[in-house]
Image (tube, rainbow, N blue to C red):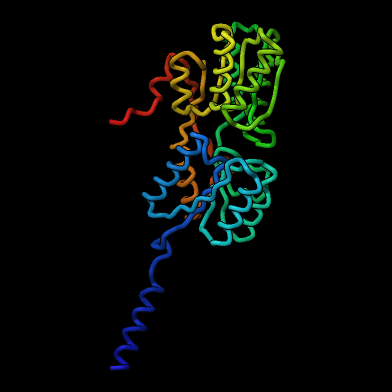
Length: 308
């Protein structure tokens, strides 16, 4: 009987060892830039839904625009020996230690939405930030008839995506000599900051014609300030991300433009790129997501369907 039991145990161990590697459940970490921004809330859902479809587990670490907290969160994921990490870095440089830690542990770390200036960044699932900035400026200049002062409420300093967006915007706007940029501030991506900066801009330049905002939250805040000042008819406001409140605002005419990037699709794409990497696929350094300019004429069709 003992020999029989020993034989069954040996066969069981051999069967376990023979199981294919891909049958094991993957565990990935997720470190987004914000816990409260609607864009990142939807992106997280996209990641979790796609991961569930693949039978993967997602472990989320929160940061809410705190760089040190984000780095520490990634360090925790590395210590847990996750299979891969998806991150939207708060700062392109200051998060460098997180990327290095993942690299040393042989864990792929793929940036989504925001990228890092780190040699240890595995891949970047990005938008074509410079081109989007150019497209926003081209639309604004055409809509303003090529004349009028321009104010920029850009995203946080040190975040390469927002620097590239601003770069593209300024490159294109420089082609319109009648539209000088008279105001440029880099701030956190909150509606409160959009409101405050727009109020300051309207005091310094009451005849401003275009307000460029680095994301929809900033743009929605700017729209509040412009409406309170009674200047909506004379000021064009642009945002970015295509979140439902911004699309609704564009449809109503409070904002004038947002760029639809679909954070749900972005989150799913991030998981798919990670899945490919873990299978041995090696795409180019950047994988771009498509973008769409949403104006009053077409914004409504990009609104999410109403719940029944």
